[in-house]
Length: 169
Figure (cartoon, rainbow, N blue to C red):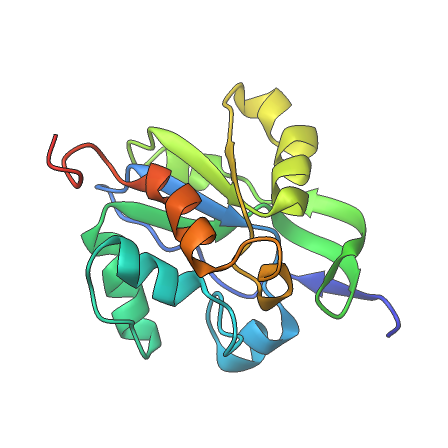
């Protein structure tokens, strides 16, 4: 597949109560086609969030947005623009980061998480030096990551996004 210059297609999901920011790399072509984050049918992001919060798996954009906001999360991506071949993160060139201050000015974000190594590495390179904030790496929810992170292992690692009040502490 030939690389193309792609511009981010979605606004961030957050409100003034969002405390945790989850950053992917860039929406996949399937997500862009379906009009929202993590919309590839085999991506485990939405089932994972639903399992973490004991909620039904959201089936549409409104339900997905509600799930994010209900649990004081924010959702966006590290990149605003890049050159990429399909959904292959390894092919990313000419990366232009999103301006996270848009969210950070309006929401009391306590922790930032990245989904996948590429998102983490791009955050470290393009955003961390300016923000002076760290991100916590979380394994990708992509179906390509299932062998390395089967469901139970993925769920166990992702539990760190739960806020103390969610854990009953």
